[in-house]
Image (cartoon, rainbow, N blue to C red):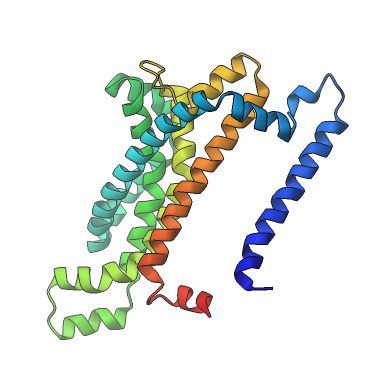
Length: 263
């Protein structure tokens, strides 16, 4: 069997097993308790019944996630360059970056609502907070992990600092950057949904998946709630796949990990 086909079949088979176990557990539960775990068929039916609502909520969540994710990429790259230039700068700023990362989103949400109002701006800002840390940490680590021998070679040839940065350190840091990007792409939709639960708004049909999940839960529409969770997972997969494709396009011609994987 071709290796590529096997890579496609194994996740599909695993998914079928998970669905079978899910259905079996649902059937095992008593009639009074089955609402706790709707069957896969009921969740699929809820996806169909609420497709318009979920589609609108998905678009709103995607907008907030992409805005926060994009802002995190820009700010983290600029800050990572500054952090890589001086150990003193890293020592001074790193504890505060950790403090920002360790502050729970539900605590930050009311502050964001006070500052920028409920809705898209708060969701984007909170998504930025959760996606920012893995990006800046991985990118900084990549910039300061450049081969010392190559750095000395650039100095020997009297390369200017900007030449050393853009011609040596940035290419060497790309695998680290894409690692951080993958992590951020995975958690950005989660951050957007949690932010939407705490700082979202339904004004002008602006409610996202988090806001919709709260509504479905309050109405005891559990299959629709599971359908919302499945939609969130799908959004995360799409964003992660886009990052993987970008990483492959950027690295597969020269980076060792991709060269080995192609053999």
